[in-house]
Length: 242
Length: 113
Image 1 (cartoon, rainbow over the protein chains, first blue to last red):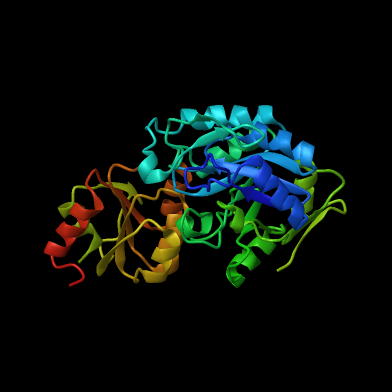
Image 2 (image 1 turned 90 degrees about the vertical axis):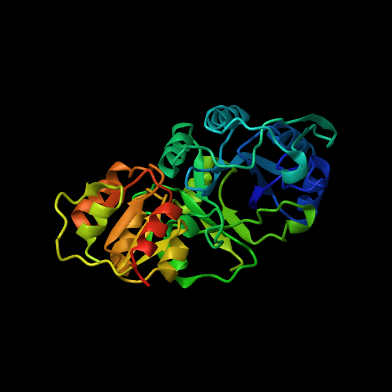
């Protein structure tokens, strides 16, 4: 599985990140499950889920939200309704600025075949005024999972901004980057929490999707099962290539 | 410079602790908001200027031996940050001024030079 993939809707996402190209690519690489997680928005989730069903790849509805502290979290849900409810909250906390497409990039909503439907006007690539605690609480309140994104990168990460994992933050999991060296301090803090880290591509272009590196051994693809796997509970578990 | 002098000179509010040790010294100043970077570069004795208000700032100050933190541009600590500062004896200050202005003032006073 790869639980962090952007689409053409993210201003920094490539033009090739449309449902047929992404889903055929991940299918060819052997993925069974992906999560679509654009910056502070979920508007392309329905198109990807519909195409995923057709091609035979499970698409989890997700979002990569940016907190007040400039920290990114991948929020994962079971249903489109949940992710759109989360989007409603995030939009309320996102400064209402217009996108400057020449500076930031274009923000396209597409249909299942990748045809451009509408461009999102407001700037998506920026911080909300939600704190990390508010994000985790909000996502849990809707029955979702909250994963600290790419903690092994300096920019926009829980580790980079706050120096280490805050002891009392009930974040469900952490994500590491496929190609970066593993930091022993990070691994030991993750182990102390009794969780297994995820490895996700954070792909913004088709070429950024790596072959599968992260595997969940679960009964079905659901938030409940994933949560158990991250905690290595009830026979569910996560394995990573490294 | 004594920390209590710094509090008098700068346009800051004392948030914690209730009483500052009159002998507490500050020897330099560091500005930064990425805690992982601050952890690697600030020096013991530095007063730290930041906009981060999460309680991890107190842990970083204790770890590095930073006697005081100034939250700049009107930022106020979250509750648990305040409690932790009181518990750990880290001097926590706030100001409406920017880090640029505070650091400039401290530099002109000769701190860390």
